[in-house]
Length: 530
Image 1 (cartoon, rainbow, N blue to C red):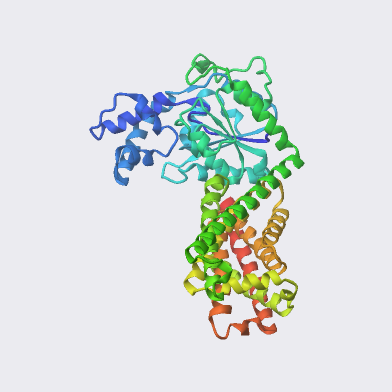
Image 2: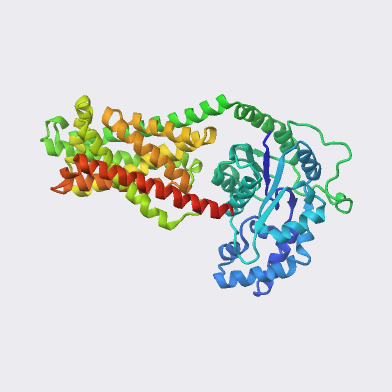
């Protein structure tokens, strides 16, 4: 069983339709807009209110804020109590708490209202942590709310996302769980649009509270004497949002089967390895197929075998094919795996730390090239010599696009987004960093690039871990590639960077930049927790 369970409130624990939609009606009426049908206002349940007013009624930011204030005018007095618990929810919370789980609320609703509602229903005692948004507009997005819950759990020594599960009824809840690497169970009895939860990538979807019980407690029955809320509200624990139990058993059984695998460390590990291998294989095969199609088309146009072209022309078309195949593989792999990748960071980022990160990228790239050149490792890798000749025998514009932009995009999506992301779920950071770096190195297929890519890959994984967004290793990778391409190939004095003194200087600079980056991001993380 999961040790930490995070619940959304609206549409998950209770049905807030009457209160929320009634208050939206009240706010709209102040703008001269009459909306008699509550059903049409259901999309307001879940997302931040101001964004919904702007999205559905084309309000300006100022009008939206005014509408939120009118909404709260009614909600703070009446609307928050126009709410009912879903059938069986009070008993489920009681039994989860009795099982020893840590329960938390992660809601986009202002914390002060969440507290009032939980007390009103008599279920406040079940929750160790309650986090919502702030009335002044802070922490309105679910990713920010979930990050704050994680911070408070960390202070309690319960910060392992793999032992956490987020339960909610909207895509925002699924995305909030992904942002911290936690599991997610979606409930379809809430207010998600058709296909919303599936498209968001929920691990499992249950149809009712009994299905949720089966997932979390293995189908155990409610303890005798448990109540759905306090006695005043027990009678209101009605059929609101309920669905029949038909099908819920099969869903929960299917999930329990996967949950059993997740509880087995080896099962988790091999599942992560399998997903990683599939992503690498797909990237390689897609790149190879696109490249082959392009080179075949060139051969047909020239009406000769491609090998018969002059050396520079031959390398030019190889580079064009490489660039286009990299772009194609990036697009396809992004489409398949983007839901597994962290794009929006929930971590506090010290903007000053970007400076040592960029310096580290440039310095380690030159330093490692110096080491590999001075040790003459290339003598043992004819494949690298051919690849190197092809890569740098190309127009500057094509080299910058291919190696400075497209390669970092494609490789980061696969190797940090998928490979490191999957390994990070089942391994501690050092092991995930090293294994993902080795996978990146071996993927390159020759000795020289394997050594270089392994070192760079480990640093890219660390950058992804520290910043919490795939944009960071993409920037690092791009800077490293461009710096090598420009300094060593385009500048007439580039060879001077491959001397022993220069090599030592760049490696020392790399170590210093890495330490400074670690310090700055460590302090940013401490501020976020504090």
